[in-house]
Length: 198
Image (cartoon, rainbow, N blue to C red; front, side, top):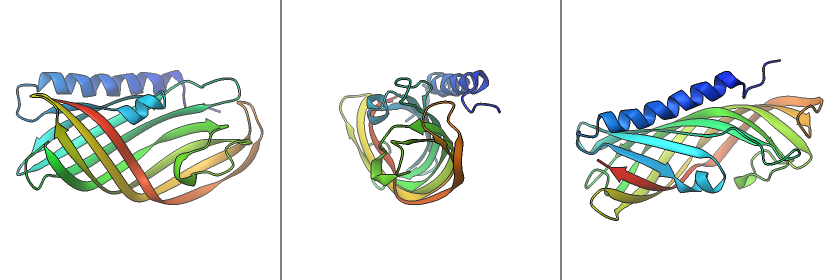
C-alpha cells in the first residue's frame, strides 16, 4: 500500500512552494502582486505560502498551500497538505480594506490523537484517520496596510467539505476499522496572514 506521504509527495509539495515563491518574485514588477503567510498555520507547525495576483477590475486571485510533513511523536500524528484558491472582489481598493469571494480547497491528511476545530472527525483520540478532502465556500476578510509594502489580513470562510477517510486503530500500523465519507458544513477557511505587496 502506498503511503500518502511518500517521498514523491514531499517533492511535489516542495516544487509547489518553490513555484509560488518564484512566481511572486519574477512578477514583482507588476502592480499589486502579493505573497503571504498564514500565521495560524505556523502556530500548528505547518509550512504555508500563497501568491495573490491582480485580475481586471477590482478583483484578485489567490493560490495558497500548506504542508505539515511530520508527526509530533510516536502516538500523535498530524500530517497534511492542502491547496486553496480564491477569487476575491474588493469593493473599494485592491489589497486594502474589505474583500469577499468564493474559494475552493482540497488536500490529504493523516491524523491521530488530536482534537480538531469545529468538531471535525470526532473520535480522533483513540483512532487514526487517513484520507482526502475537497470543498469550497464563500469567504470574507479585511486587509490593513501596516507599511508601504506590508499588510495584515484576517479572513473567515463558510462552506462545504467532502471528506473521504479510512479509520485505523491508533498509531501508524493499526488495523483498518472503518472507511467512509464525512460531509462537513461550517467554517472551512480561517486566516490571520502577514502579506508582502510588491
